[in-house]
Image (cartoon, rainbow over all chains, first blue to last red; front, top):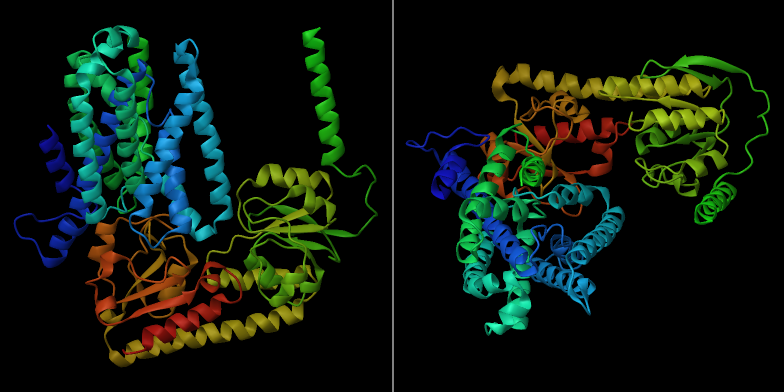
Length: 303
Length: 306
């Protein structure tokens, strides 16, 4: 299915290509522009969905999503700082994004923790607070930047894949593959922790270590994808939900399948974003939210 | 008890914000003779016969008001207004998108000039209640700019100087148009128009579309705007489409992060032949008197190495 989605995405775009008789220009369009963008979309989708799936298992909360937990906004703020102060370094963006995502995750987690242990309402509330706080800092920054740069940022904040490059793609690819593999390796302890952290400890699970790995890897995945494409919302929420509806809640299946389904979702959403008002473009984040929000409400009501 | 203290809190905060928020506005303004004029949106605006205090909410309007010789009547401009140099000394009332309405009212203007129709209704109503007229301009072409200049001359009692100024501007513009027509008839080849791409922003890639006055400027200067059929004024264009356009000439709206053409143009005739030109972003982004400078510069660049 992923391959089918990739093929569809590569075969349509704002320019029609004659695939069996490519001119130089068409070759350039296909290999320099369309392909990197489609592949980057797949990696971003896989990263966000895998991060979402494992955060949901770890926090035993179906609402745990990078976007809602403030992780995306942390990464966005980090990227923005890198852009403003260290524009010339290629690695500044992903590094700052990773740091921002990690810090936001850590803050939310600390706020949500109480003597009684992790509380679900507290967690979501902390996520919302950190998200809005970070948003206001981002708004502050965009107000201080001059108008020409602002236009770029407002697009980017909504999730925009048009800035795809091959180098950005390789980095995101490495992160998404490695991240998903590591998260998959934690699937068994995560399964036990979904029953209860105390029970998991009785089974010999090192809860603290699992938590650290999942938070760290989720920050890595969200950080690299936000640095490459801004905050694409709802992927980490809606995709693991759909996967769990079809295969149950065993994380050994949910994590890798979410990654694949997330890739398909973002690739298809970006295909719509690229073509629906061609030759103009929409940010992909607008499409994922447009599909994701109603779908989520539907799923909530059905359960 | 809890409820009443809550109400009290609201009352206090209302009183405090009212005390901070408004100056005294209940004194009726002294009588001034007014007349009715039509603005660009076709609204009937009641303006003083003699305008002494005006505020401009766009750099293009500020430039036009100075151009007709009424710059000394401006008591407020935006933070973007930086031309001519005299604007430095004028009070700033915020930027074009978010003007500070309290500051505007405090400066006691008789009229406020606006160039976009955004958020206009609430804005006009608030100012109207303070006895301040709002005049909206909506220039879409160079001729609209000339018409606005004449209107401003009329409004500020500077009809003659405005007419003279517009006369010299339109003479320069028609000279450019004449020259490009002449070139074309000499070449006897209507397809010889260079294909132009105007890059407003590099990343993401923004250009000019159907509704931008720059499309008309490029065409008047003898170019063929490759993006003239795309809807809206400043569309974000697909990189695939941009690559396929293969422009002969690229113009960059000169700003810090728009100094180079986008990566997608690396094999375009424009980049291969070194026909990439930077143009001062202010003169091509403001539909004001300096648009004629932009027209001349674009025409000159298009004629070079032809």
